[in-house]
Image (tube, rainbow over all chains, first blue to last red; front, top):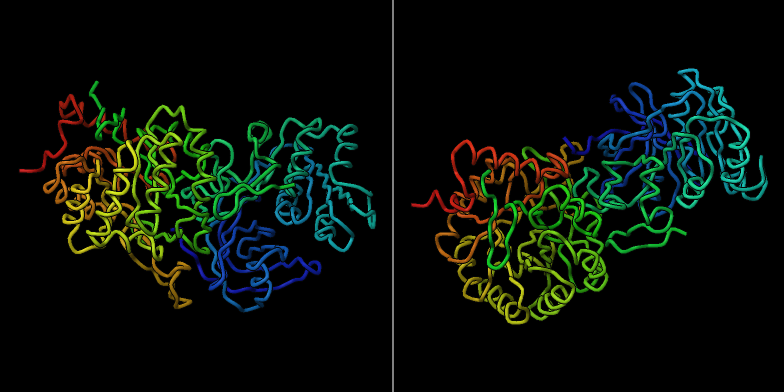
Length: 260
Length: 302
């Protein structure tokens, strides 16, 4: 039943000055890339991808970007939140030599996918792009999986000086990857689409959501593709046919808002 | 092969399944997907004069045998929405523009703009159970309802449908008022006003507290309303409420509906629900040796 389940926050960890991780009990099975609707009672209900997966505990990692996340950030251990889901398709996790490209808070949803693939002894490479070294999170967690982790910062304060897409372009020319998984700002993912990509490319799309069960049409892109139910993960062929990809999204009233 | 064609005034539908307002219908791409899913006609999101964000989430929650929603009439406003309508100019099936307003003047402005941007018909939303100053508040008084209907029917030449609320004492008197004011068809029913409470938090789940209940549970209410209305008016009735399968459609036809609208079943059975239901209809008609679907309209009446 698509009704919120009430759970309490089990742990709180501040990853950066604006990024926070909560864990809570929810003994359901989740495919990396799927998301929950998180109900902050009296405030809002917003989609949030799952950032850690164990049989009983699940985690979400979010940046303070608006009223809802600001209110959520103020909740602490023992406070009640509502959750429903998991929703969406999740990553296919195919490939023997995958490369992950995370931009901004994208590392939050990619981390469980990296962990899952490393458990299956794949040769995984991860690029984490951040504005500055202070905005980086999950670097150590991802390194611990045995994956090759490459950091980029826009200001050069750590790792490669430049965008994640610049580094991706360089290393794609030198290495035979068979899959690419990405989550981050849409203009970044759109830029990746123009590179010489591995045969499998999957990107996670974010849109304003209301029902999250494929009914209301709020999160639709292209020819009625529901990000909540048909996505949030889409492949390169599908994304190339979506004219608004990387260009605009729709606000709560359904008006187009530029993404650049 | 049985004939599934039905008519509502001057509109001819290749099959009687219409996409209900509020479902996958805020942009042209989504509407095209519903048409590809087999809809015989589509109704747009309810559109007003100015943009509206709607209510904060939660706006939709599942309950036993149905869904409760309080979207709060989110829409980009008529002047933005017309660009979506223009993209649907060559739609292979009729596009019905749903509009809401606070008075007859607003409805008239919206109706003219919808017509100018190629809408094939209009649906007046005078029955939304959860938007303050709009919807049900204008649709419960026969005089106001007649006033709005007349203002619109005299302002446009395309057919005008009026969607009625079941949250009233006597739906038939509203239907009669609408017919006398010149409406071309009646759409019945909108959702039933309801509420659901979270026991752990001891508070209503919907941000708006109350919402509209839809889905299989409300079908008997819809059937009763369509049956009563069709005994009191001569214009066509479009049945809506809980339709999920082909036999649900047959039941509405027998109650007096000329066509039906489908909403919640898009969630229950997916975007191709219209094709699935049409296939079930065809099978039922074949099995019962009915050549024309239209022959069943009102079959349950004495």
